[in-house]
Length: 94
Image 1 (cartoon, rainbow, N blue to C red):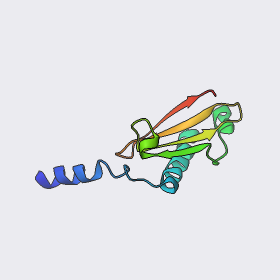
Image 2: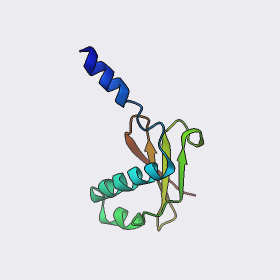
Image 3: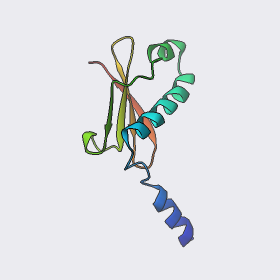
Image 4: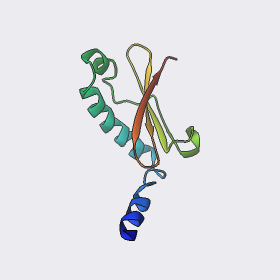
């Protein structure tokens, strides 16, 4: 049991030291998967993989990284990458 607990603890913060390029690569891949499960309209809105911003570490609000993708409708889709590499999503209007 101790070995399992230590292995889990070692993996829990593996994304806290992401580089910008690593964060962008993770977010782009996750975005593709998320948009495959979304509506066609939503997928078309965020078709581009060109980021509006890539923020890491102290530049974020408590996340390992934030990556924003501009939408054709003026919104921004934001990947919220946690320290344990979980990726959540939000969007905002400028």
